[in-house]
Image (cartoon, rainbow, N blue to C red):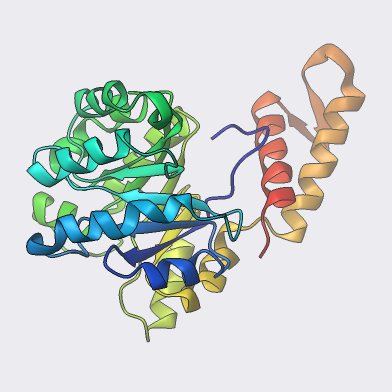
Length: 285
C-alpha cells in the first residue's frame, strides 16, 4: 500500500453472490471494503446466476467510499474463466478482485494480461490458502503492480499444512504472509472469525493478527466491524508519537537522523510514522 495516501483496509465484509440486497446494505455498513463472493458462498449449480446478479451492481452509483471487491472462482475452473471473461466485457468494473487458491506468481501474471481495457484498473487481492502459495508468497506479492492485498486463508491452508487451526500452529504461516506483504508494501488481512456469538474469540484473533503485522481482518457480519477496527486503527497515543517523530525529522534537516525522547530515529521510523498519520486521516473508527 502506498504509505503516502493509503486506502484503509482494516475490515473486509463478505456477502454472498446470490444476495445483491445484502451488498447494498454492506456498502453502507462502515466496512472499509466489501467483497461479493462468487466462490465459496455459491454452490456450483448457481455460479452463472450469481455472476449475472453481481456484476451489474457496479453500474449503480456509489453509496460510500468503501472498496468494492469480487471474489472470483479459481482460474483452474470453468467458472473462473467465465468470471474473467465477464469482467472484460463490463463498462463499470469493481475496484478489485479477490483471487482464490493462488499457487504461483504466474497465475497472477496471466490474470493481469487478460484484464485489459476498462478492466485494467482492477486491483488484486490474493488469498494465501495452499502450501504452494505459502511457499511462493513473496513472488505472488510482487507479481503485479495491481497487487493491493494478501488475504490469509486459514481453513484451507491448515488442511494443506496438516496442522490445527490455532494461532500457535499457524504462527509461521501468518508471519510469512505478513512478511511478504510488508516487503512489497501491500495490505494483509486475516481470515474472518466465523463464530458470530464468540466476541471474545474475535477480540483475541484480531489482537493477534495486529500484533504480528496484519493491517486488517475479514468479517462475515456488520457487528464484527467495530471490533476489528479497534485493533487496526491507530490509537491517539500512536498518532501523537507519529506526529512528534515527523516533526523531529523535519527539524533535523538533511542528516536523515532525528532524536525523540532520547532515542535516535532513522528513516524507517519516518516512513512508518507517515503511514500512521495518513491512515488515521483516512480511517474512521
